[in-house]
Length: 58
Image (cartoon, rainbow, N blue to C red; front, side, top):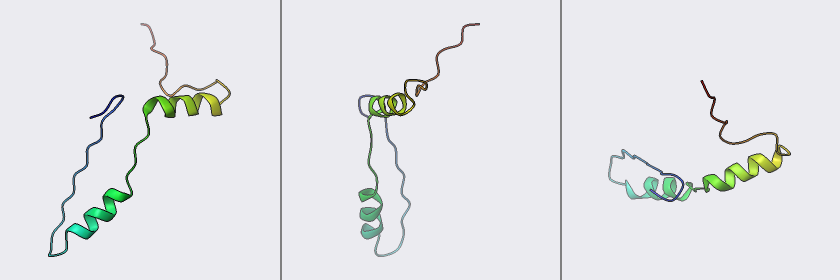
């Protein structure tokens, strides 16, 4: 858990050499702050798009 999101991973490894595939898998995972993604979407679309759609009132 971190500010702005969470990340959960589950690995099921078997055999004698479990450490190596786990190390390789976790090296390839990175996180980006949601606020950064939202800003990127907004900027790349010239302000037309937003990561979260506005709430629709009934």
